[in-house]
Image 1 (cartoon, rainbow, N blue to C red):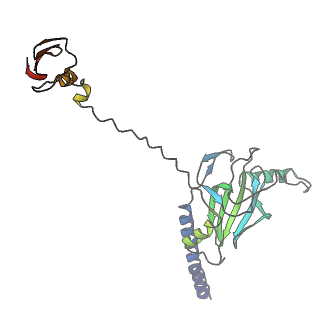
Image 2 (cartoon, one colour):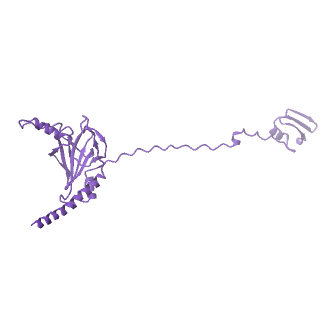
Image 3 (cartoon, rainbow, N blue to C red):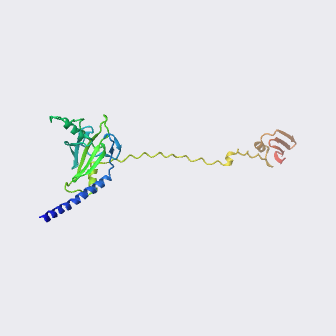
Length: 269
C-alpha cells in the first residue's frame, strides 16, 4: 500500500514539473519583453517608469487608485470581458483599509467606501505595467493609467486567458496572443536635423580679372592709305600744311607726322 502511494505521488510530481517549468519559462520570456513600472512610496506617483502599452481592444474597466476594489478583466476570444462582476481586492494598502473598516464595524452593517466610479478604456488608450504574473491558465497584467483631468489614476487587472486552460502554450504563441490586446508603444524618434547646405564658394578670380584692362592698341597708319582713311584712324590732325601735291598732317596724340603725295600716304614720321 505504501509503495502504491509512493508511486502515485511520484507520478503526480512528475506530471506537475513540466507545468511548473512551463510557467517559469513563460514568466522569464514575458519579463524580457516588458519593462515594469515602479511606484513611489506613496503608491501614487511613478518612481521608475517602465514601458507604456497601448490597448488594441475596447472594454478594459479600471478602478480609481483611491478605491478599495480594483477591476479584474479577462481577454478571451478576441474580446475584453469581466470587470464589473469580477472585482478583486486592490493592492495599494486597500486591504488594510478594509481591515480598518471591519474593526470599526460592531454591527456588521458598515459598507466599504465605493469611491469614484470605474472608468472604461478604449482602443488606443495607454497604460503603465505594474506587474506581470504567469498563471496556469493565463497571464495577468496589472495596469495603471496616467492622471486624468481631476488628477486621479486608475488601475486594473487584465488576464490574457490561454486557449487551452490545461496547457501552457509556447512563449512565442503566448506573446502573439498578448499582442492582440496590448503592445509596447515605441518611443518617437526625434526628427532629423535639417541638413545645412553650404553654397559652393565662387571660383577664385584670376589675376588678370583683378587688374585693370589693358589700353586699346594705338591706331596705326600705313603707306598708301588715303587722307580719308588716316582721318578715320587718327582723327583730324592738329595741324596740316600743303605745298603743291604734298600735304602734311601733324598729330600730337599719338605724336606723328603723316606726309601725303597726290592724296596718299607717302611716309610717316
